[in-house]
Length: 427
Ligand SMILES: Cc1cc2nc3c(=O)[nH]c(=O)nc-3n(C[C@H](O)[C@H](O)[C@H](O)COP(=O)(O)OP(=O)(O)OC[C@H]3O[C@@H](n4cnc5c(N)ncnc54)[C@H](O)[C@@H]3O)c2cc1C
Image 1: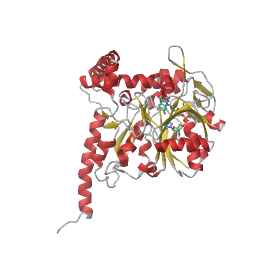
Image 2: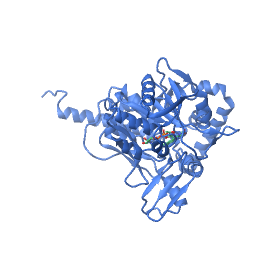
Image 3: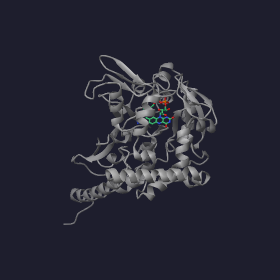
Image 4: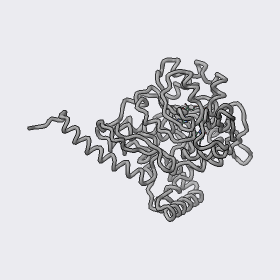
């Protein structure tokens, strides 16, 4: 009997083989602790899902559910998983800043609706863009992340109304895999972390891509890293909320700028400042992959938002409460057209700024990019290979800042060796 390619037996053998190759590729990423839990792999194979591991980060797990693995899944995975590879995007005609990336336009921006501005993380620019995308008919579904039915958790969501956009406003400093939501791949807009957006952009060029998501408008935000879910538990413990006690509402910031980490229970409301929550607990609990990230500035997105902090005499951001202000970057022609159209429609207020103004307001992102070559080198010297990064010209930044990179290389190597000696694995 001869078997044609449409034969179910052939499909299941091919699927099983592809699944083995995909599993091996995923294992290599997880073993290097380079899996950030974005959920891209789950879009290639319906029998994978994300679950929290013992360290409070999301990891892919086999559910045992049936389903066909995508054709060419392993190759697509290696092309687009941000634990394998990230490429800098340089659209023709764009300008390029050495640490802030490529751009067509950069502004200070905020939502013209005061309620949105107040609720947003910084100026509510992304939420205002969501509202405008829905109202103008450019998008009927926007994939992003928001609070879960258990308020301690953060989950992927599909936003279809302005009310839902407002409810999703504000940063969630906890693990969530926007790409694990099947709806993401058929949404007309996606707002997610830079690593997730880079996977969507890279997958658009891959043969086994999960969908036609290359048509979606891609929005992102500056990102210093995803903290462990355990850090949310630590914040609650500081506020004396019992680990298993009911929580009515929990938000990390927003409702002011920068806003406070706040928890509401039936009995009381308690909060910590941004400095206390991000500075003391969340920031130090970010994932190892985030410490080796080449792209905290969302280079693959069409539009990116950031905090446009004021800085003190020493160049440190000042976190005094005030009306929110976002830095907004259009990284593509499409992004430029969208920002101009949203401003013309009155959804956002924009004021053109120089990229150096945004770079000055983001000392952490600047320093991270300048010293990344050293951290990657230190990791290599300690025997742990990081993901492959192309087009970021990290070596040129290292040549311009040799001492900073040398210090970073030594520090990273020492940290990995310490971790391997005490726990048997990389941090
Ligand atoms: C993990 C993390 C790290 C960050 N690091 C930085 C940083 O280094 N520098 C900086 O300037 N700003 C950082 N931010 C904040 C971010 O810059 C602000 O969200 C941005 O200024 C946009 O503000 P906004 O008021 O326009 O956004 P909003 O109007 O508040 O909209 C924010 C949108 O982001 C989505 N979102 C929130 N959390 C997540 C998440 N975990 N994953 C995916 N989508 C999410 C929401 O659904 C919402 O639609 C970080 C945010 C997060 C979640």
